[in-house]
Amino acid sequence: MSFINIISAVGNNRGIAPLFVRDCCIEIPAKLGLTYNQNIKESQQMANNAVRERFIDEYGTSAIWMGGPVVIGTLCNKAIKKCGYNAGVNMSLFKERKAQGIKYNIEKFKEKAPEEVKDLQKALANKNKYQNLQAGKFALTTLIPIALMGFILPKLNFKLTEIIRKKQESRTHTITPSSGKYSGNIPSFKGLVSTMANMSNVNKMAVTDGGLTIGRVWTGRNRYEQMELGFKNSMMMFLNFVFPVYLAKGLDKLSMKLFNTNVNLDPKLMNDNEFLEAIKNNSIKMPKTRKNVIEFLDKNPNSRFSKLCEEYCGVKFLENRVRDPREFVDTRKINELIKEINKFSTEVKKSKDITKYAKRAVKIKSANIAANVGISSFLLAVALPELIFFLREKITGSKAEPGLL
Image (cartoon, rainbow, N blue to C red; front, side, top):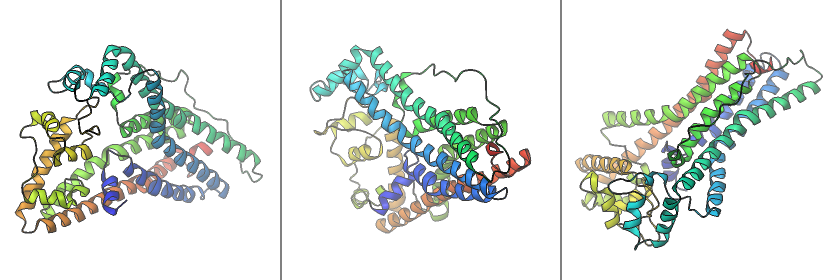
């Protein structure tokens, strides 16, 4: 993978790549170091136990958090296929719109894509069953990771610590029984709507993060640990899923003001010579209005714009370049791409050298992405833990992990 492709992936806040870089490559190693330095102030034994727990907790959680929805989703798709359905039929198509919908697509593509239309007809004829299967898939891809991360992993981790501490001859104090457990049942998963089955893996990760917070608070060994875990996980959700998106927009706007350079497009696209040549020659053919986006894609499947929509907007085509009728077309995302291409074209044409402008834009965008990752990682890996350490000492009167007291 080239450098520009890596930058593009890391800069995509709708993807997993930036989460992986921040979480596994920067945040966790930094947290391990900070945890050791904080707990060594109490004792070497306390530091060893705290670092081991943090290592298992952080990397175990990350593995389940990032891989769980994908693996479980794949298994669910196979199960749905065994039931006679194609899991690729998008649930949003059940709501009929002017230019797309399951009935509309069946009629429109019955000659162009007969096999795919059969999948649509099967789902439509058994709508309730298919929706229930997809709802079940969503439930499993979120509930299983939540159970593993929020309930099972911490319990096993705590049990390991308990066994090790019993064997440590140099214990300075006895282990206090776990306290502060909640009474009642685990919240039930009710009111699930079938449209949630269309969530991306990143959105499912956000949902499981919410469940993780509940699970961690639930399994906390005492009320101080529960308070700390609740605060920590809530702030981590904000810094992982909300803050980077707004920071990226802010950095891009600032770049326009400081450097008079539009950097809103993906760096991979701005680095594409064919794309730049098309801008220079005014040869990018795009929909004239927002309303005929789908019509344009169907009439011009091999156009440069259709291929851009395929790469950057999730539009899917079959091997014969007929648009996949089972997939939902997000016209809002496509219209946003049109708007940004027009903005970039207007700005780049003002410059004397289009290639030079584009290269500057790529460099600035790359710097913005690096800054976003750096700032977000600093807040997650350093600022948040330090704040937690400060609050911990103020509230509990100790520098050690509250669950190990």
